[in-house]
Amino acid sequence: MKYLQKTLLFAALSVLTFSVTAQEKFTLIHKNKNSSALGLKHDLNKVGDTILMTSDKSILRVSFLSHAQKETVMVDLDNKRAIIPLHYLAKGRYTIAVYREDMIIAFDIVRQKEILAVDNSVTDLEESILRSSLSQEEQEKRFIKPLSKSTNKDTRLASNNINTKNQLSDKEISERDRIKKEREALLEKERAIAKANLLKLQEERAAKQKKEEIAIAEAKKEEELAKQIALKHQEELKLAEENRKKLKEEAEKKRIAEARQKEEEAKRAEIEAAKRATMLAQLEKSKQAKEQSLQKLASNTVKPKKVKYNLTLVNDKSVDVQTREEYRKENLRPNGKPYND
Image (cartoon, rainbow, N blue to C red):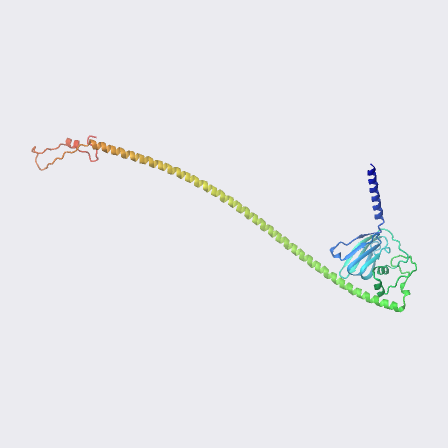
């Protein structure tokens, strides 16, 4: 029970700590997660009062669009690193556009709590970003002098209450203006190049997308053709299987018919053989009967008496004349049978 109480107490403390931590967050950021924005790392520091950006290509300009005031503030930077203090921006939602050499990358932030400015902070947003982002050497090249030790608590956005130009000589001001004009011209040129590169990139993306669409269409067409070929192949296989089964059935029927025919032929041959055997037996029996009849007839045959006489002679009792009865008794008919039958 004590363990359960401790667990619940720890969970409650964790939730409370998380809530306090979440409430202490000054700013929320919605990062740009597109693949084209991989060259720009943009995030908040742990407290959420500063934006930290590093780019693989020079950041020419950064703009801040207030969704509430519908106003845009632009800061020319021309550096690969940018550190942006957020105490200049009031609570609300902002869209930040980062102008690079090749493209423009945008992301959103939401200012949730007021951020108090530290003592001796710069009152101008552009100067503060330049001082935070540029190296000391680069600041000297751009005639940005070190901060004085005087206290200035004015933290309003783009405040012009203190004119830093009053601390510079006329020559330095002239040189600074010249450099600023040259830099602005260079930035305009680079922005034009960036715009052209962006347009070219968009055209290349459009061409690539069109090419991908054509490739996808061709792939779908090939896939459909492959499906049709596969379906046709399946139908051919099915037809071949049906033909094979049909041929097999026909061959089986033919085999059965031939077997029956052979069986019938064998039966007929057996019957014919039986008939031939019967006929041969009958012929043999008839032959034997005939032979027996001939033998019997031969045994009953009377040998004819040979008589020599001449019809021209007158019967003067000198010739032994055979009578008709005697002839029939001693001889057979022309068909071989006795005259008595």
